[in-house]
Image 1: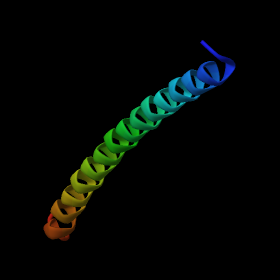
Image 2 (image 1 turned 30 degrees about the horizontal axis):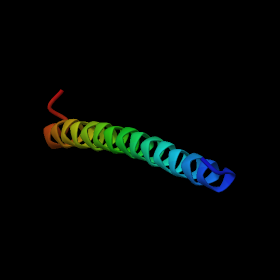
Image 3 (image 1 turned 180 degrees about the horizontal axis):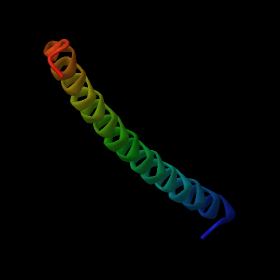
Length: 57
């Protein structure tokens, strides 16, 4: 294998690793986004419930 072949192979390996890292980060960002959206929906629902009660407490 020539030096050029080694460089090409290393470059391809680095590219694959970068893609895996980017995919993993995107998955985590998606998971966090879903968690935040769920929390906001839940909090909004609770706020509407409390606000709808008025002075009945």
